[in-house]
Image 1 (cartoon, helix red, strand yellow):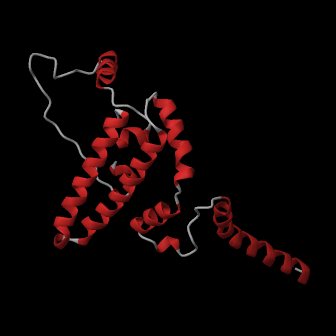
Image 2: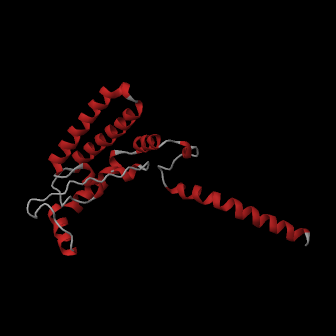
Image 3: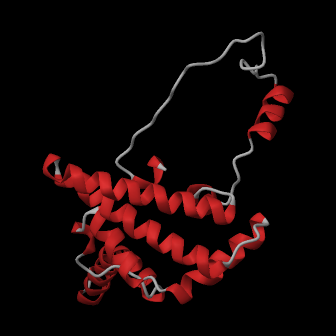
Length: 179
């Protein structure tokens, strides 16, 4: 093997090793909210805090207006945007408080009450919960029951006074699954 062929082979191996490392970094270049280089060591709460700090009302309002049109809600985009911002900040503070331990229990109860107030105001203005609004789906128990009847599922509530008392909860370390 000649010296030139060895140099080509080394260059090719170097490209194959370095290229996969560069591709993810290049993907973040287009996003202005891209995490900093040290971000893989950030905790999920730190990431949410950084994302919330970079979010501006002017950027969120068109998305809220679009969601309002999709869901057919008669509400002000500005007011819902403000309520969503308050809800996100209080949710983050509540999560930080819960991590703090038992000594912050009174603070956590106050934050939980504030979250409930914001949720109630949001539901009053839009007719939906914050989670329903963010997911883009209204809770429709009647439609879900009709769909279950078509598929062959049983509605235990309507059958001779029977009721289902089962509860199923899934918890995951991935925050998005807990909503």
